[in-house]
Image 1 (cartoon, one colour):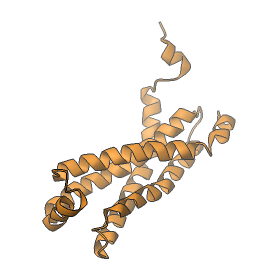
Image 2 (tube, helix red, strand yellow; image 1 turned 30 degrees about the horizontal axis):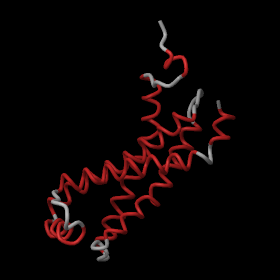
Image 3 (cartoon, one colour; image 1 turned 45 degrees about the vertical axis):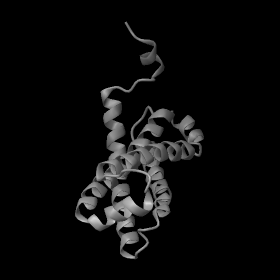
Image 4 (cartoon, helix red, strand yellow; image 1 turned 60 degrees about the vertical axis):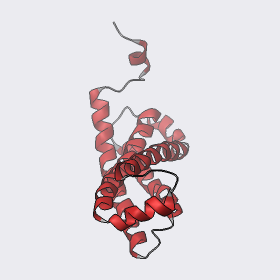
Length: 163
């Protein structure tokens, strides 16, 4: 007996999930490297105390999302809007996950930076490296979803023609 969700294509099966991850992984790796290099560059030139520069991460995620959506459109057949959106979100969130893992390790190495974050950036919060990682992942999840959804609006006509 089929369920309604399977008939309407709202659920992802194993092959579709695998395809989405194969499409998203290169973007996630490239985006993660881009975000890490940006972080290290900001740290190297001494602007690391300005925590508001992290909002530029979202600008850096835009090419990752565009790359992933274009890669999805060029892959196989049976393309849907939701799958393209999901692949873009996976890639962007994967980029933030790589940045978060790097940040977790970096905060254990550079204790002075962790102290600066604790005192200047968020003095009202009791921060630890793990709590900063959780904040980064949450920030990345929200930002990835919004950026992917906005960029998908430029591709919806293309998605209709591809289906």
